[in-house]
Image: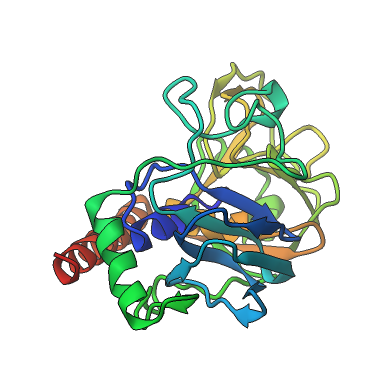
Length: 300
């Protein structure tokens, strides 16, 4: 759901960004390490402890063999991400290591993890081994790196963010009143929301005209308007096409803010141009590239 947080967790431990990690939603697991590991936690704020010692997020952590990592409930945000050096060893399915529960594809047998499941990892890269060796030289047991992601990366997730929205193909079909409400109103993330889409509750958005639409491609962040007039924001497990009017597209830079919302949270929309959305996206990608280069340079 929060692809940016997972990418950054992988960068912090020297992995390729597409390496498989754990997505932890609302309440964390307890994990026992059968061997020494280099890990990083990003995303939502959880109270995380390794053998009773606080485990800070957004930085590399060396965990000794036999240690236990425990995460409580989410304090801020909804989803945390755990990356381990080497990446979790799960098969490629349709070119991806992601898990899709609705179709029982990917991950560990296409299912959620169960008590006593064992997760293996691939052989860590030389960069990962160098980061781990530096940390082991400081302290033989659990140790957190003195460096990590800067403030611009460690975003402050909010239960009521303002999300930037590009005008959709069918925004002009909204009535004048509905267009004003789209930008003015605060919407509630409804209880029927899930990984496929967030059902928003708030003012009913009506159309100035009814039009039969052909199904068209949709993507993460597409805002659809079904006949009832309550918008749906499509998320990670969305379908590939849809026939409802597409009234907006959430800018990629704000997908993380969406991913960290849970039922009962709120959001507002703010218009953004395509040019500004592209500029912000490219600026963040440049920051990630600088982070990768800096870590590699400091651990040659």
